[in-house]
Amino acid sequence: MGLTFPDILFYFLSAMVLVFGTVVAFSKNIVHSGFALLGTFAGVAGLYGLLTANFLAAVQILIYIGGVLVVILFAIMLTRNIQDAQNSNPRQKIVLACVFGLVVASLLFYIAIKFPRLEQGITENKLTVSQLGDALLGTYLIPFEIVSILLLATMIGAVMIVRKEIKPEEIKEPRS
Amino acid sequence: MTLTIGLTHYLVVAALLFSLGLVCVLGRRNAIGLLMGIEMILNSANINLVAFAHYIVHDITGQVFALFVIVLAAAEAAIAMAIVLSIFRSFKQIDVTTTVELKE
Image (cartoon, rainbow over all chains, first blue to last red; front, top):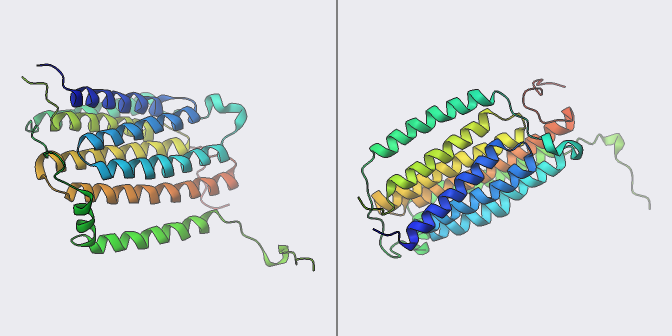
């Protein structure tokens, strides 16, 4: 059995996700970690595309790469010390963390192998964006509305947390 | 034994990504590095949701849940960055092992 094109694509994307993920987890430079996170998110978006979740792939690129990653990079630039960028992401108890990670990985591995080998996925374009919209505004209407309230609360909360307290006497009258 | 990509392949990739995220959360001292680990964990959970929707349920449900997870992750990232900036302003650093005081 030869490898078909989707198979090769799958292996390429998984390798991309895992290699960049390793860089994120082990790099000593936080800027390198941040940019490696880009590769991880892009690879996951590709995997969504392979799983016929086209809309999710687009949302992953828009929100994760365009939103979350930019916020993370801004936070890195606003908080790190330029001089010690080489050692900006120090580790603690890395051996213990790796051992724990290996234990969890082997457990999950065991479960994944035990799972029945299903290979018949959804056939060509059975799921469309319109179905997703129907589900969001039909079955999942209440969670959808709650999420919009949550986003509003997030926006106000983030502004409240980062704003500076200005005491009334510090406010200067504008010169007329 | 065929080489066709099945559910197991996606589960294995998600498991490895989850473990990498876990190592990142446990083994970091920089608060932003920690957050990157959390994002990786959420991404691996999303891969699982979409893979199950694709191979088992043959339905849109898994994708809807993955969409909600993405929204919550974005909200979490925004709030977390606000907290990190606020911590940096009062402590001049974001090392999670040294910023242990709750009150200035």
